[in-house]
Amino acid sequence: MFQGILFVLHTGIAWEHLPQELGLGSGMTCWRRLAEWTEAGVWPRLHQELLAKLRGANALDFSRAAVDGSHIRALKGAPRRDEVLLTGTGSKHHLITDATGIPLAVTLTGGNRNAVTQLVPLLEAIPPVRGKHGRPRRRPDIVLGDRGYDHDKYRRLVWAFGVKPVIARRGTGHGSGLGTQRWLVERAFARLHWFRRLRTRWEIRDDIHEALLILGCALICRRRLVSLP
Image 1 (cartoon, rainbow, N blue to C red):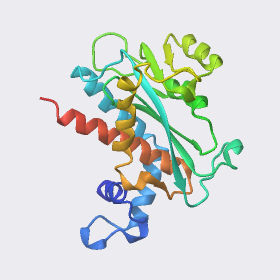
Image 2 (tube, helix red, strand yellow; image 1 turned 60 degrees about the vertical axis):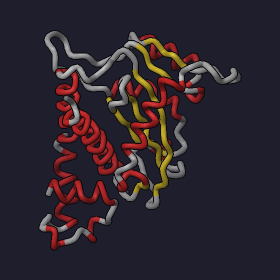
Image 3 (cartoon, helix red, strand yellow; image 1 turned 90 degrees about the vertical axis):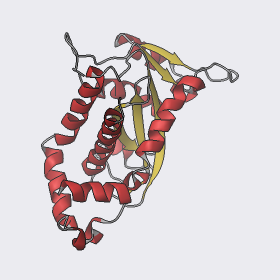
């Protein structure tokens, strides 16, 4: 069943078209198993465990983090539990990475939601990451954002978390140097959207699409882990 879920995530194929000759079970059976595992909270735990292994291998850098958002098409309406988002066109992925581009957390909103509104939810979504002796790490020292996150209210909220916001100001010229550090989150988005099922939202249920998003983050973490010397 898990192999069937991975096949759909990688190829973007419709669940009902999952090839039976691959021996992965029926597409709808895989979808039901995905829904059951999602309800059981499997995917956040998997992602958290992989982050802990990366930290234990000194491959996770909390000295700074970067945030960004990416709009995707949602061809089936993309409803949300939050009624504010029902009028949005498409959906939006919001991502926070560590200083090396490892996904720490991801959120999903309607396409009309401003990226800055997810700055605090992204910080809150970072799990406590173990892997070393002592207290687990959950907050980066610095968070980097482009001009879309330029709002003093959210700067104050980020400071309240004990995190220093480094966000470009609107109306200022380019050349701040943030781009040389923020490109890692853009690269992480490219890797996340390499999974074809995440490039366009087909899932009507937001929890199912969120599950695939988190699974994509976990797979990126695993690739980094197995590439370590």
